[in-house]
Length: 114
Image (cartoon, rainbow, N blue to C red; front, side, top):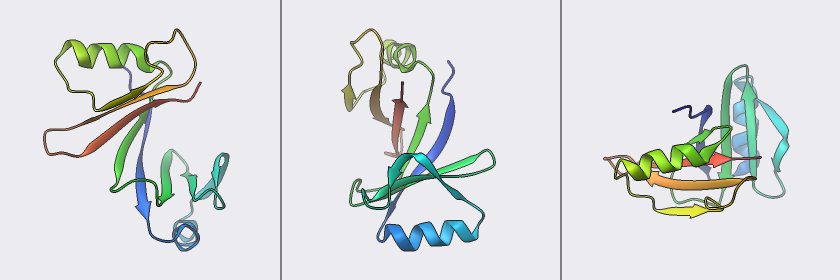
């Protein structure tokens, strides 16, 4: 099962302050995804990626971006993993995502962009 690139989606109080902080750590905003005005952005530093989300999620989320989320989804369902939410998983192609939690309640999002 290939989960693709992973990152943490951080719940932040002030998107501008958080962006400025992570820029000091060498992160650069990825212009393809989100904007400060939309209150969500992704940032990269080499192979490291983080998402900053203001007023969108109640807690931090571990996120995976596989090329094809549908086989991952089916494999987890076949193994009895509870899926909390899903969108477009039954369609043949295109963007889709689903969410689950690990045994300690940490949220996990599997998000296919294309």
